[in-house]
Length: 389
Ligand code: GDP
Ligand code: MN
Image 1 (tube, protein in one colour):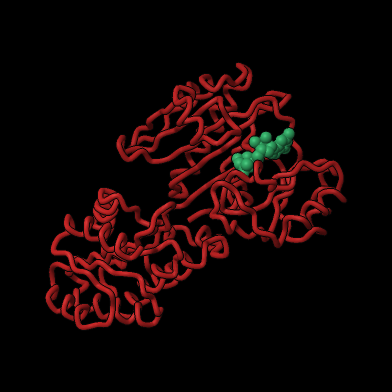
Image 2 (spheres, rainbow, N blue to C red; image 1 turned 60 degrees about the vertical axis):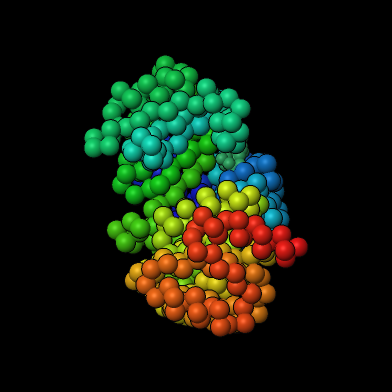
């Protein structure tokens, strides 16, 4: 689950991380009052679940309270399009008004779990303020990675080494190291999947401040954090993500693809994506219906998949177990009929009641092609899509 910057900065502050003084505002009047509190000089920042706001005009420096109100008025109620949002952007329902920070240098620091190293890893770079993916692609040597001990966590000497590697002025290394220790505590105590500060800045007075705050929380740990679960903002999700979430389905939209993938289970989702890619076709999305789905839920899943305008064919890949293939097939027929979708379907069904499932699809009016195995599904999808064009 993603948090807004204004929520993440509150958490950071609670853990002793230095952040600029700031107030969240949902109206121009609130923004004006907040800026007045900072003597008029402030930065007004659109609150959306996406980075890249600066380049998209969502972060503006203002020099008076009136200007803060004007900027808030121009942002609130609009959709902000950044390189991290889709073309439709994300709705701005509020702004963060922060005191102006006198920036000397912009640094980068983040904490994620590294799947290969199987432990939280700290990534840091002197190339802060920029898009870190670009830095990673063009000058990977500018990013340092420090693996933490999976049991103990981060040692103070490691935090100090990172501060030094970041080029923090000697007099501020101790406070920077303690900030990094506190960031790590945020990561572990909130069950975060990501804590990212870009930029972490050194001010004119050599103070080290987290100027931007990004914290994502592991969905499966939210039951342990009811206070954090309340911070969810479904308005930031696309309509299809929201519907999937309501139905208890795991839906992921992917860029530049045209095959909708309905699967049961994360492993099968990955295999399905690999298979479609190998056939030279790209997945547009994948939707994991999970184990115990009923017909209605499968129907909603199918409807969500074909509501994505990028989808030109659907690969239904079900391994019957707890979810029986005949139930999945009935759900697909129900969903396809309700949505009126005409996109071709390629179906692979194995396991419990596979024969019944395939018969239900065969006897339906749907445009279904069958594949006996996953490996065969790939060329079949490619052929069906070529024929449809
Ligand atoms: P993002 O673009 O969504 O990552 O938004 P950020 O919060 O990182 O802000 C983008 C950029 O705005 C930063 O990298 C800074 O260069 C600039 N900025 C943000 N706050 C301040 C501030 O208080 N003072 C100054 N001088 N620049 C700021
Ligand atoms: Mn940023």
